[in-house]
Amino acid sequence: MLSLPTVDGYIAQVWTGTSRTPNVYGGIAKERTFETAYLEYGVMQELARGTERRMWFLHDPIEDNPNYDWEDYKNNYVKTLVASLFHPDVFRYEISPWPNRIFNRSYPKKDGKGKEPIPPSYATSLLIIMNVLRDLNQDEINWENGLDPVGLMLSDTAMFQRNHPEISGEDTSQKYDGTEREMLKGNKAKELLYWSEFYGLALPLLKSGIPVRPIQLDNIRRFTSYLNHYKTLILSYEFMKPEAPDIHLGISQWVQNGGNLIYVGDGSDAFHQVREWWNTQEADYNNPAEHLLESLGVEWREGIQHVGKGS
Image 1 (cartoon, rainbow, N blue to C red):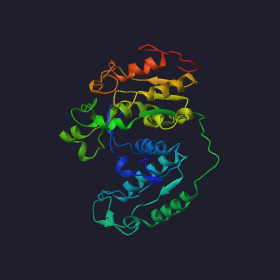
Image 2: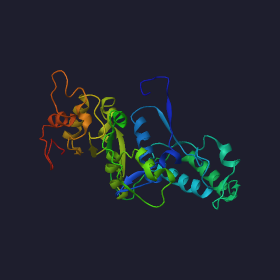
Image 3: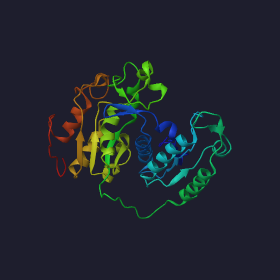
Image 4: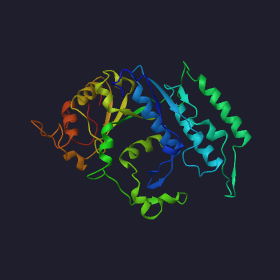
């Protein structure tokens, strides 16, 4: 879509329905609406950064599933709303795709006895919030802890590893807490794809209060200065692969200029063996990380290695 000149903007389809999808942290699979929304909005901010394209963040106080009560909808809406505000480079919002289903429909009561319309006090709160959102293009933004965002690289190719012939690294032998929905019980748990290689890198940082943002690995080829916004990047090829070798040239230049790259992986992902640029024609690498390290001029080993002004 970035290559289509007739497209001048995007709406990030992030809302309670996407963000309450369970993931695993500390061995527990459960809904983490705020954390997931924070990462989803972060992906979408990075999609448009460096372009002249506009990005809108969707907020939806009601989701497609009509079986929750108002307390549940409100709790999850607030989590997605606040999560979006942690990405201030985007300040345009789709406040509601369907206002009618918020203000004119009834939903189950918490005690399960019938349905009820939106509480008047909550309706007032929503309208106040929606008015405030139109004026969030702020010139001055300060982070209280003074920490620079850490970039966690993410590529479109991650989606190629979510299907046949197998799914990268899925472990369904997780334990579940007692608050999970019916979908997490019994064999249904095996149908869920937790994407733990990604969340296993992202959630520990986020839970520690470190601003982590999924950044678009593919954008390194599109914009020469794309990585300059970051001082520290985390990269793993155990759940995705680089689309082309010149991505590594951009990463290498960024490190030499003072960037700090943390690579995570042991080369065990079965998808390293697919026929791709790193193992066809004259290339003979066991995995794309070997080409990356060669581009950096370092060895495959644990520990800190210095490259130019970076490491």
